[in-house]
Amino acid sequence: MATRKAAGQAKAPTRTTGTPARPRRARDSLSRDIIVAAADRVVEREGLDRLTFQAIGEELGAHPTSIYRHFRDKDELLLALIDTLRARSYSGGMVATDDWMADLRTQAHLIHDHYMRYPEFALQMALRRPTDFSSMEFSIGALRRGGYDQEQAALYARALGQLIRSASSIQAALTAMPADVQDADELTWQMDYRRLDPAEFPNIAWAGDSLPGVRDPRAWESALDLLLESIERHAPGA
Amino acid sequence: MATRKAAGQAKAPTRTTGTPARPRRARDSLSRDIIVAAADRVVEREGLDRLTFQAIGEELGAHPTSIYRHFRDKDELLLALIDTLRARSYSGGMVATDDWMADLRTQAHLIHDHYMRYPEFALQMALRRPTDFSSMEFSIGALRRGGYDQEQAALYARALGQLIRSASSIQAALTAMPADVQDADELTWQMDYRRLDPAEFPNIAWAGDSLPGVRDPRAWESALDLLLESIERHAPGA
DNA sequence: ACCTGAACACCGTTCAAGT
DNA sequence: ACCTGAACACCGTTCAAGT
Image (cartoon, rainbow over all chains, first blue to last red; front, side):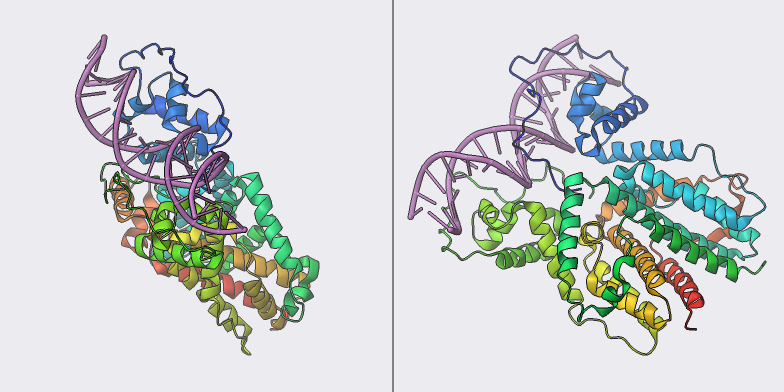
């Protein structure tokens, strides 16, 4: 996010006059998979906001615009990359046990881990690929084993999935913000917090140092516990 | 999000040769508030991705770069705008009743409404201004009235706030995506869904038509119910 | 058919110059 | 001190030209 890089600090001589005439890339040596793999490496090495056609072209040893032969635009390439990452995280597949509640919890952590593993993609993953059929299949199955009927299982699977995905996405995106932005936001918070009038905010004063930070993982754990507890209590099969 | 606008469709003659020499803006006629108000109007009229220094400059009748005298960069301006919107939504302030559970629910809806009111800002609001002291004060207060001690009240206030904010932010951002992107993603989903093998996805097949869509508000309502139910059950004061 | 070169229409940002 | 003009360093995207 965080808008754009400062323009002042020019790096690499960026295409000096004589451009050393890159050797022409062999015919048919490009494909969607090869381009996605190159994009993956670029992001791994330099971060998502350095994923430009220029950078991918360099990584491929090909002209930046050659990518347009295989992807309609950058958005399509990004989605392909996201799908690749998802397949990578979930390749093993979830295995149902005889404890449907434990299964739901394990799955929640798996999804959370996936987002935390690719924090720069977290928002796009949640927004552009909100429904994962494998996950949906697994959670409906778990709820079904808990005794839920079709309608309730489907509704709760959606509710759970939505909340887990949203929370994971935002939390991951928080960690993916540039360090200086995180620091600046933290500073703003600190300053405002210190300036709080205890008379106007008596309950915050009452809580004192107990207030967990924005990135404190205990909040996520608690929230998940609360959710799953209700899910278990409502289960007709209990 | 959705990367960038197509470059092909040039609009407005964008600065033809003779630039009609804008009348020079009066000295000291600019301020942070005036600029934020102008930015607000631009977004209201043309959307967030049309919020450029160029556009704000036009709205102000001033040179685009004159804004740099009052804001360090675009990011700082965006944060100021977000803070203005938040103040607008929460200006009334929450009023505690004698029903602390109802208060928590009302507040959840208030936060959700705020995000849905400014969907284009939803992600930035959740990421850059994750903690709102007024909201925190109110929810800790409610939990305190429910009998929770300092530590538990602070933890659950954070957990609740985090989940409500994340879910609202993602849901709002979903509705803010350009219509063509929404349609394309929906189509992808439909195609994949139709191609599902019932043998491989028996539980999805079992659920059949009960599966709510990604934008179905019932999922959010259910999730909130589940959460609050647990909060109530744990309350020592019950 | 596939890759390349050059151009185009934007962006945010900097900085010297005007007033 | 504040506003303006002109330039700079990027971007994604298009399209005619090469091979």
